[in-house]
Image (cartoon, rainbow, N blue to C red; front, side, top):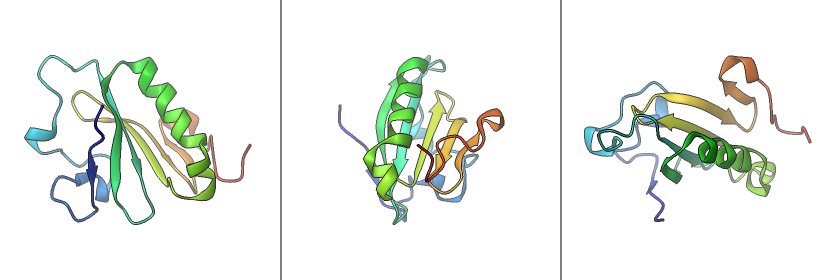
Length: 115
């Protein structure tokens, strides 16, 4: 599966300012995929890439956990991970300094320095 990688300044990178920014129409999931999810990881320079696109919930969560706990997260080459649903709503967010920031009930999990 090809990975979509956008530099921070790219017009299709609306996530620069937060999880609630709308996505361009051409970047949204195909119609009828509201139950599917995409996972993206961010790099220290603000660039990001989709590591999974339009997968089921279980695969999205498994993938996000991997990227939150992988070597890249530990050494700082992965600084943020997000899951969005087919409507492009943020359903999970993690960053290296704070750990999980959304959903609220998991706040602080997988924080930098935790095993």
